[in-house]
Length: 162
Image (spheres, rainbow, N blue to C red):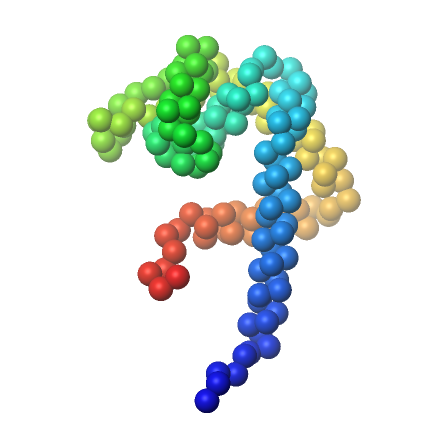
């Protein structure tokens, strides 16, 4: 006897397609090099675009090992290792022994790097004000809460039967 398809399942599938499409739009917009260039210019900093997202990721996620940073950024770990070394030579990050595994070298933001990411955050805030200009405070609060909840759920390991 064929299983009945639940109307909820069809709705969920359409909503997941819509969500996936929205996520593709968000990620592709955020990955556009010209957007990083605009952010760098708006922040009034001098930093190679290739280093920009690595610096911000270290500030947000650090201390973090190069392998994990590479995995999160979708780049080869040797490339990320060179980029972290360049950030270190600029005094924007420091590397240290891993807290849990001394064989792992973790990257952590330096005071100079934090000052730079603070300027980036100010520029990001100004840009966000334009994006969210027609949103109420409550809408923005709910959106941020749900996005954080969604991001946290994505970070969890998938169930064994998935």
